[in-house]
Amino acid sequence: MPLDLDPAIIGQEFDRTVEGPVTAEELVAFARALGETRPEYTEPGLGLVAHPTYCVRFRGGRFYPESLYKLIDVRRGFDAGKDIQLGEPIRPGDTIEVRSTLHEVYEKTGRTGSMYFVVIRFTLVNQRGDVVAVVDNRFMHR
Amino acid sequence: MAARLGFDDVQEGDELAVRSLFLSKDQVRAYARAGGQWSPRFTDDEGARREGLPGMITPGNMSMGLLASFLEDWAGPGTLRRLGTTFRGLVLPDRTIRLCAAVTQKDETARSIELDVWLESDEGERWVLGTATLALA
Image: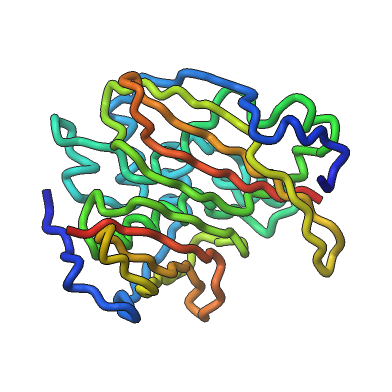
């Protein structure tokens, strides 16, 4: 463990927040901002579903577990990347429960010194209990 | 539903036709608004400079979104199952970017394919790298 972090908190859920309901207008605006014109993503109606990366909008109520704020200056972090695994499509009217866990913490040493990477996993579940996406957010801190 | 690419239409080593697009500041602002990322670093040059950046930048999430649309334009809506990215450089708007991908592996059992994907500058500097999985019919 690179930081003075209790290893027991790895994998523990630290937040559970319900967001939504998702509106058709939000889905269309998101898709159009990416230049989408396909009806599946831009035309309100029964066939409308969210663009596959809409899931990255959901961030839960707390971004990091409380104990991490004491060890890391979160204001000096950078978004280093994301990994999304898609499940059921998000549709208008869905509410999304965001289950947040501290998935991984690791250290890398580069030319400019040590960097800490924090991976927060958001498991997104709709009101029917279907997983719509698992999103791993990787943040880099110096 | 638009036509989807068939599993048998794809071979390992296939490269997608590169898509060049001009990424305007207004488009980035529209994404920041729609994506819930309305922050000076994504919307305003002066605000971004106050954060130590050279000017407003494109959210990493938007780069992912552009890559996802690029892949589904090729294979059809609903085919993307996984997308993993590393944000290596600042994607500055008001310039041309290129979206690229190549098929690296086919899985006969799952009827899925793996791809390397990347977003690069017009000069070929790779700012976003990633891999993707698509499910094909």
